[in-house]
Image: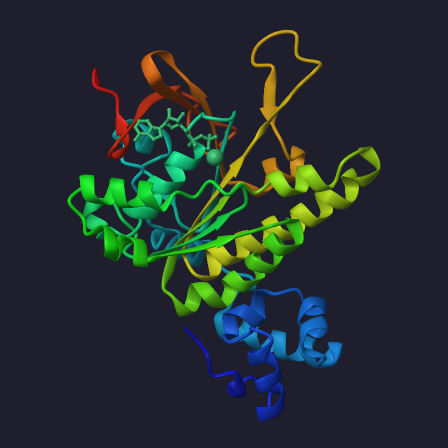
Length: 315
Ligand SMILES: Nc1ncnc2c1ncn2[C@@H]1O[C@H](COP(=O)(O)OP(=O)(O)O)[C@@H](O)[C@H]1O
Ligand SMILES: [Mg+2]
């Protein structure tokens, strides 16, 4: 982690303290934030910011890389267990870092349960399928249940107090508050060794606030901007990002599933892995990975229990 801002070309102690008090405490954060946004928050001139950013990017080399360098970076990618072997396999071995994974489903399909489960498993050592880090959880629907975290942790033989201390939770009250919290992640993640970021759900405030066709373009633009910030965050800090999404009825569907993911193309393009969830028989859940660049679309069954997420008994 690079926090010596004064080492950047054009940053004296005055500029450094403006940057720090606006929340840009690391060279990574400066390199990956849109310049206009830094300008608005710090009052530093636009051209100065461009110069500073050019230097910051040199230091963390986010510019062109060779395919071999890309390959090396991909090798540092880690995977977090969901608790179900089958679901992990469907995800190519677990939830990846340096990527956005989206869980889509109707009310009660198990999205929040998966989020609560991985808030616990992300903290495990690597040999037990964890990311050995802490968790940031943005809750937009008021459904984060600390009791459930305690239950999952205890039933897995972990100390629930320790586990709960490593999950930083923020309730987002509206979409602009949610955006503010996402901006805050750039410093929060570095300062608290966060390896998993959860946004449950990414879309609900946006859907509720931007109603009607005339507001759709603005909504999609905002959503797009913040999804791309999350992509940069996942790459800059090698962490996993999990988003949940709702479904919306597709009135033109005569065959097949009448529900489709909310958020349109913007969500579809930004998310690396998209997983559809639905209820199955006898209380089980069925996950289907959709339009992934490298994973097959096989329906997978898992169940929700006191221990969180598990394979079904017959497996
Ligand atoms: N301890 C538990 N044991 C078994 N099932 C549970 C437990 N806790 C929650 N569930 C199941 O999880 C469902 C809620 O799933 P949830 O993740 O909140 O859905 P959503 O997709 O709306 O976020 C409940 O209806 C219940 O079936
Ligand atoms: Mg939920």
